[in-house]
Image (tube, rainbow, N blue to C red):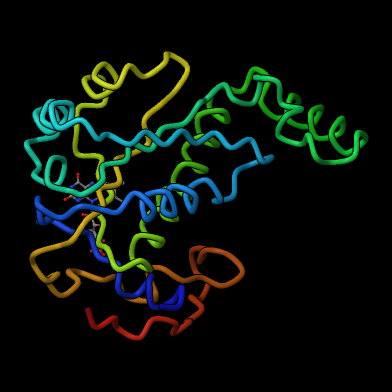
Length: 218
Ligand SMILES: Cc1cc2nc3c(=O)[nH]c(=O)nc-3n(C[C@H](O)[C@H](O)[C@H](O)COP(=O)(O)O)c2cc1C
């Protein structure tokens, strides 16, 4: 399967086969794909927590609007991020680079994040979003379905998984075999609402028309 085929065929799974087991080797490949996602300054903020214990899964489902994917998925990954990773010995993110490059990057990291709470959080979320997407595309390419999820009580989940105070939860990625074929895509936006050229239209200006998306089939 090509990357484009994985992107086109990935859909959010709503009903996983609770009896399906994900081979450990595939889980590791999927996690590795998550870890290979790009991160700002190579900080690798992502922390990928796999929930294997059925009792913990049940507790998570209870605080996730009782969504069945939480217990029925073959793998449930809580995609988290260490918001303070930028200050935790940042030289290690560049330890294989020449010393001069390492020093420059460490200075740049400090300059970018120091006293910028929102930037710290934004970057952690950006990077973990990319990791989540990698998990889902890797799962698809190995023949599995997935569902990104944030329909849960973040504070309650944080307690259940013992989330450190300086970490955040980005989303769950549930992975397994979907038992129900996905419905046709609902409400896909028109091209003119999504694609722009050179800038957003200003009042009185004309709207560039880019036709990129042939209506996706399913
Ligand atoms: C951040 C995020 C949170 C989501 N949370 C849930 C969720 O809690 N439960 C669920 O069933 N689907 C959830 N979804 C899946 C979306 O409903 C789905 O991706 C969207 O409707 C588009 O459908 P598609 O992924 O099949 O193209 C979430 C998606 C994202 C990106």
